[in-house]
Length: 71
Image (cartoon, rainbow, N blue to C red; front, side, top):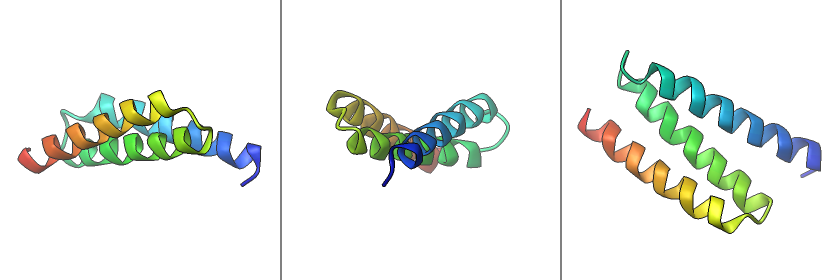
């Protein structure tokens, strides 16, 4: 992947997370979208070799996925 594609992936991940987090109270599907955004951000962190960020975003993805399951 080119650096521009990797940066675009990171941008999409963060924008997805922010928008879905803001809309979580409207419908449980936004919690699932937030979990997907966190997983995408974790993948981005892996690509840029930012392992602390990878761990943090992975944890957030799991937490959000579990919240979506119970919502």
